[in-house]
Image (cartoon, rainbow, N blue to C red; front, top):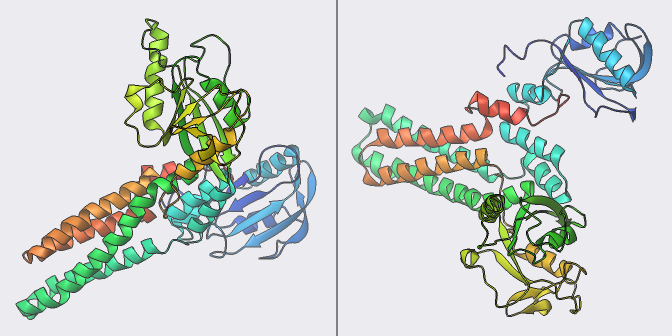
Length: 444
């Protein structure tokens, strides 16, 4: 959304549609305070909650209201928030009245996009805000708020290092006729190389922490793999404490993937039940299910190989790094709680999904193999920007070591700096930016 498109007054319900004690209606844009004042018993107060009567087209409503003058608002524009009773007849009537006065209904995420356009938030903060709204665990909330509040300062340091290195090279190029050759090579270029090295160190840390950050946001994905009738569906139900999967004594009941999730130690785990790996089948549908099972295994962060006998193997999955082998239907075993090593035999965890034996031990083992290190980046857009920046920096370092062409070094540093600007949204593609704001509801 460009600056021309953000003109006008927008209005939307900021709370969920439905009955509640209190609702919130947001209004933003130049002239929004004057618009709302035209329907109130008295003018709204700036920065202070006040009690007013709103005169809608065919009724009146006693409510609370507060005004915000630009730039001291969420959007950076003049804004008003109204707090009527949470009755949708009332809320719809207020919104329709404001629209009749010249406002329009806000688009998805338009309040946040205006905050971005007006420099109140960068694109990474907008993404963090969306993640806060979507959070299902305390870990996700803590991580989202830390990113929103700028708690990861290393990326900012990398940006400053690149800005300084780029300005140094450009200055050398600009005044190259006035400088001695040794001044260029020994003095300034060494400073540039140091800045590049420091920036690479920061960005490598972010690259390495991407998997952990993405897992916090999206959940740790676990695929249940095994032959037919080994109890994968029963295990899904036991882990998620639900009846997500159909369980019958008939082998091959599961033909497609079935997904559920649970939260353990504040972390979200997404579990996918899959079709049994029946190598002798001629059933077309079952073969498709097996293909989807293998895809789920390849896409997962970890795989649980479910067996009922120790000697059974699944050759295709033996190379997987993060895998847990379990022996199911060990109904006679004793539950060991979180101490999964006590329940292991030859490296295989013995459980009973049907009786719930050692399910906690399995959850603890999954938690222990889950990556804990993370940085500020947590989605593929952000990761792509970091990799783009690193690639340019590696090339710039290589060119600077040749001590030949500063023009090439400057061009590569500009590419690296542009990737950082793209990360924060300053040079991001409009389609990418729009995709970020489409994650929000209408009133955010």
